[in-house]
Length: 331
Image (cartoon, rainbow, N blue to C red):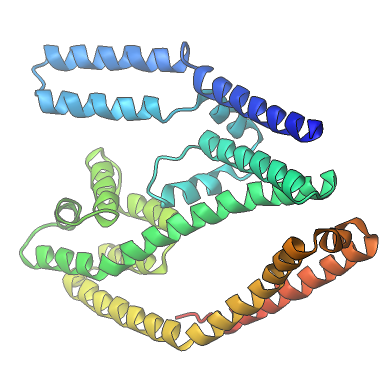
């Protein structure tokens, strides 16, 4: 009991220290400079006759930047995390303001909670508990970010043909392509509206349209948006009727969506079988663990049991990978 109490106390204390350092470390440094810049911007806007609404919006945006900043954690993440650009793209695809430091803190917190839970409640050895906790700390936040990004991509693709139709109507009425994209940003909901507003704002600041579109395509990682950018790039180089080209692209995207839904319906039985077969070993282990604790824990204490677990997990992952490959089609 004393060991369990010390483990819980140490984990809670370490978590509180990390949060205190992360959220309080840069209050007098970067946040103070941002606050001074915000006050100076507000004075210049007031002196220049800026409207209250615009000044309020700028102040609100600066407050959001200050509130979401975790200075010390961000510095540590920038120094030690690998592949930071790819991770930033993954975080931006979620549509949420998640910094590298926040992501690192969440991973560390999940690792600590998983280690304490596995070590205390399941009675596993420290090395095995640390291995499982490390896998949970790396895998669960990664899966959560992937889930949020995929859900946002699905929302984007669901209305993307409608957005292209809106651009086509603007082109047919005589508007330039940038103004037609601006109408999409004004009239359509997020995430479609936010992405096109970002594109139009970048163009207004003097950047090239193709450059901004390719950066957006790299961040979104969707083949449908790549088709859209390629169509605009080819039309700007060779000429032609852009409205007709985008109209054909809209029809193609709708047909791709219909085909994808048909494949999802036809492969649902195989996916259900994979879910059931993949979860059975874990469900049976939990039942045996609660019915006969000493018998189940022996599987982890004996080296032969560890070898059996490794072989079973390897064959299970191989089978799941094969079944996932069988139901995945490129359209």
